[in-house]
Length: 246
Image (cartoon, rainbow, N blue to C red; front, side, top):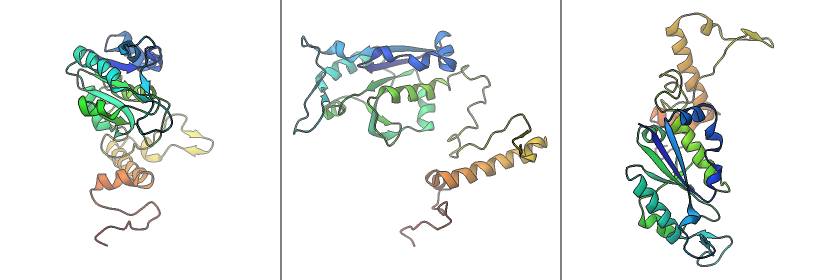
């Protein structure tokens, strides 16, 4: 089954872009996924092909019109009725590895890329659109977010990564950040590969990797560590976090 990606954008020439090289590019050439950019402006009905207007209530910038976007969205939904429709927006739910795996296991995805000040809210009130964010920052448009989302999905498609287990021990797969990696040369600038990784003892190696993953997660991402542990924990500095029970 081919994973079908539709991207609704004002800049269809951006796609497949970086997704046309490396793993994703080879998978595209092999037919493991398809890329279908949709020009939003094609669904404007005035002679100027207008897609935006000034914000109601005043303010800077322009807002993408609900009527134009709805026609584009309806076209995408008709073409792929079983694929979820996502909109890239900073106010969306943060994209997680769990959600990526769910999407990669499905028939594909349609992605709506915003520009300017964003979308007319009535579009989300009227259509089944899942708002998604790739981080707490603002980009010029949703296309960069779409690249990130699609790359995360495509690499998980069957046959894209070499070994079937390649994606099983990565960051976020078990709620932790990934352990450190090493390779030859054994000694580099006076730094040596940890002895346990040269021991050949698979049980000790697994235990070391788990301990390192927990250590890194706790120090760098205490939010992930607390979710992994299921209880509040100490901050990286060692001070216990305040809770309502304290």
